[in-house]
Length: 460
Image (cartoon, rainbow, N blue to C red; front, side, top):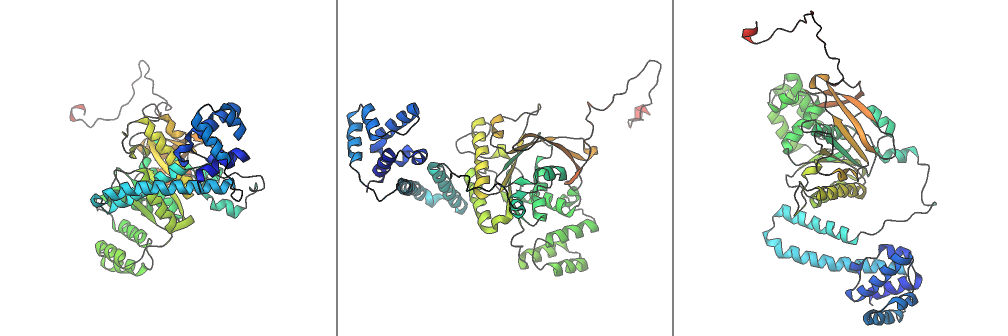
């Protein structure tokens, strides 16, 4: 059976608009490309699917006329248009898979284990792109307006950055893409680590893709937030006795049946022995984990691969994926400073959020004027775009404002910030005054203003 011929015959006979919306030229046998072009031209001009007679009237090429005559003779009354189209897409997918696997097998001897998995993931991603068709159509009887509270709660994720933000939105919805803009050194990665810790503390699983920082650095940052200890002390291995115990307890809580090891640590105070025994003898909690992917050449196919593994392992407990950060994701054959690939990346992250039913979070860089670097278009795919406002360290505050938010009003909020532990408090506080907002001292004639003593010896 010529499946391409059956599909076109059903399309022209039934004038099935649903089939036409999903049909692509690439799916068809090349012999029918001229007929497909005729249908496209007719539809663009008259906004309706043509019949055989309509195409006969406009077909000028002898080849197209002969093809139409052949298509008229096809009689497959037992096959519906939808079934025929599905069979055509399956056939196309099979053929493309063989082509892609042939190329893969040719290079297989030079691939290492990681490259094999990434290239297989790339094949799946390519097939998804080539065979993507219009999503399902729903009538009013297919959708419920009133969602039960328990169902609504399943589809919402509380980021934990700010109680007011979470309360007003009721949590962000699964399948949403959240982009967080900030200048260099403003705390974008710290914010992402806080989001990850908040998901972990809520009993969920979260994945963190780090491109610039090593996995060990990311884990140390997460541990300082989780255990509420001084981050610099943890990095320099100079924790106080109290801080060390807090880290040990937080580390032990990641594993099952680890209480005895904490008691052993309290006796001998050997953190190295404690951790080595912990990872060797205890098992990680099954549904409550933090996974870190350290990949300085992170690609979309690699992200897709790891998200798929997380979803199959943790199911609905997998709530958030963090990509640190968007501007650094590699697109093969393109420069990371080119704006067009970054727009594609943004759209792909949104697709992944929908595909795996999770919240995708990624920071991005802004310039001195607060504008998106390289491409404003990266915000097009975002459901929520937050802009971080840097406050002075002594203000102990982290401020955010929404530059884009779908289905809700724009918001500004400020959370408390502990720069020692790097923990962002969810409690709202007053936004500190900026340098421009603070009143300036005016020196009046004949009035002496006392100035603080200088530390310089010649000024004493």
